[in-house]
Image (cartoon, rainbow, N blue to C red):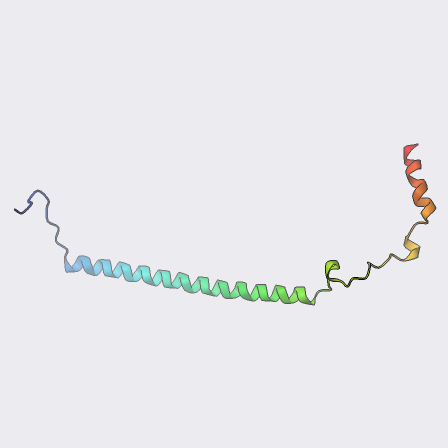
Length: 93
């Protein structure tokens, strides 16, 4: 037997055409967003490459240096050993 309690909804050609139009618009919007993201990714990649090349051109950091000990300060800038030893006792007074 046919269930007559539920009203039958007829899907018209106009309704289907409207759904298709909305789906096309959604697809175009998503494709546009995808293109923008691709462009942003390209810009980010270029920025990262540029930063890496700048880091490579900078002088080497301390932990990248050879096994030799770090350079000593020039003698003029160093205090004599005796003065370094006496200084803490002055602070206690």
